[in-house]
Image (spheres, rainbow, N blue to C red):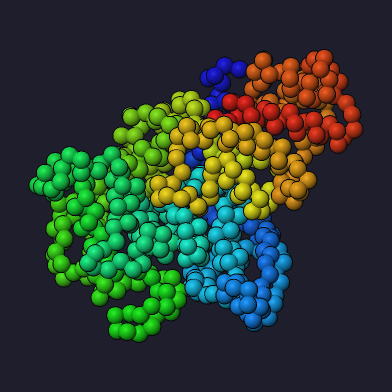
Length: 547
């Protein structure tokens, strides 16, 4: 088929806006049209995602550990959190109970030495399982892609501390997902006031003299203006930055970071600490302000003076306002979105349009949705070639979706993604995972990726992914050539490259002399295995690996 074939164009657009196409999705978009589908995706109705919600409700995640009696633990020198009054074994499959719980119900486990690590890490693991399942089975695929994008943009490492683990469900639910298509300024405030980020970037104890700079540094460099607008190598005084004397500096310097860090002093969480009156607060993980910790003196951020003796909340909110509205932030976010949804080198014309829309919709409750609509309906998006290399999760989800697999994730899936370089919610630095192909294409990562479809068929993965290759193959596919054509069209929308056909026909027939006319015969189990092997090889092709 020619590269301009409308069916291939539609597949390319969908592959970039979702975690992978399905035959049903293709039919839907062909029926409604691309613009209508995009508009619908940008206003998701959670309740209508009935199949995914049912799967989430029915999903069970294993938990297993054994505690020691306290006396025996003391004698053995075991950590107190591994001991209880009586020896106890836990070995069960539990539903995902923590996903919808408010923070004050999950966070109180923080600091409890008599609670096993497995009970605390459970909060993180449930978010992992829900994210994996939604990537494959949710009808709101664009929202899922954006949730993954924003988690990467506002990255926290849940492995750093149990506090981040325990706060992850509310960070995912109330901050990232709730605002993935909403207003950037609102999401930014949610990030800044959530226990996951406050603990991750060490703001929980930030007090005047000296303020902890970690969050302020990442706020400027990663979350808003971007590293390219860090101008300290050119200017060391705020008034030297171009535009500063007019109150519109083009970028930021270290002075801005230091002053912003002072503005956020006193932003902390309830963790059993005291308030300013000496009263003990509950251990809820909820955001709170300690005025006694706040640096109340005059500040200057991005050339704007803050009067002295202003409340801690007001100072921090003003910083968030300034960075969220800065033109460099619009450019930074627009470029990252274009890179994520088009390719590693997105066209400058689209970046400028997206940045302008970001600014025009700065106060709109659906600001991000408006930017995404502009991107997805643009001529640049529609004409962009398939050059974006799929991340491991995208590859996994797209393979499961196009093959019609039933998927009920376990932690085994997370470990497989780890081995391909994608550490869900546990990237070690605040930068988030790299978003260009160089990182993902190392030899070890590629080998793990190519083997993944075979791993999914291993007996040890029963109950995680169930495939129906032979059942999905039409009954009139009686020759190797017809079977190969059906699955090539399903995965790629076109026939496989000629150079690959001979090998794939041999795999389908287990015959070195096979041709397209060779009979596709054998018992059902054997034929199913041969189709699975053939499909795994098709999935390893560049045509499937890029979107």
